[in-house]
Image (tube, rainbow, N blue to C red; front, side, top):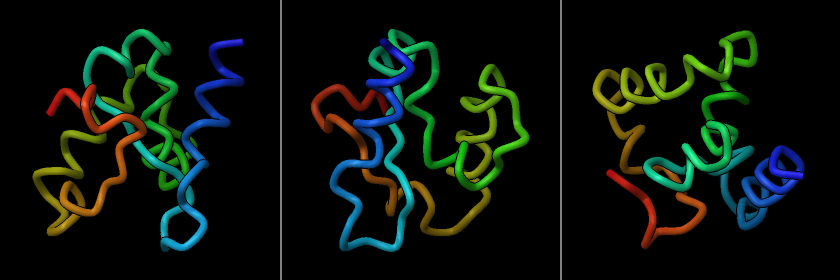
Length: 80
């Protein structure tokens, strides 16, 4: 059920944005088996789930505006 919930919740709230999914960092992402790095998954679907946190960190630092444009699932548990 965790994977189903994690995939479902990451697509909520993106209807009027240019993003396919939201991405969560921190404790909640780890508790959901890294399935909440969903924006990164949509951008790079061939990257294994275990490598998504590393990919997200690289995107945050190397792509201008990427970190600022991210929509977290739960802002108070974001873990930035």
